[in-house]
Picture 1: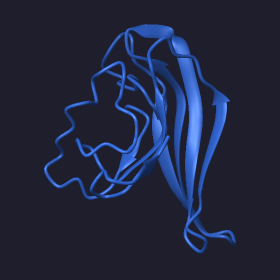
Picture 2 (picture 1 turned 90 degrees about the vertical axis):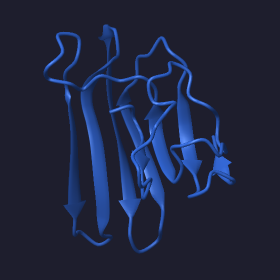
Picture 3 (picture 1 turned 45 degrees about the vertical axis):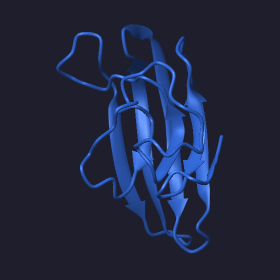
Length: 124
């Protein structure tokens, strides 16, 4: 919900996820193996009065094949007027990662980037 994808974290530990200022990449703290189109404190929860929007994913077989995750009208945590819509596409053949943004409104710090599985190589 905090604007990033993580692969193979194992125990699900994410000590920095609730912070309003995520650490820059690279960083060996969890989570690692991260693709972060908009890592900030977001709230897509339909069970919270200040939450909303949606996070969806889709596998597209369309030459090139890709996997898309999209955050649609997801508010920033405790700032429900700050609505964010963005997506990340993972292209299978080329290994490319594409970020697209329709609207980003945040008062908190954010991080955009990628990081390898042990947090030793990354790009902000």
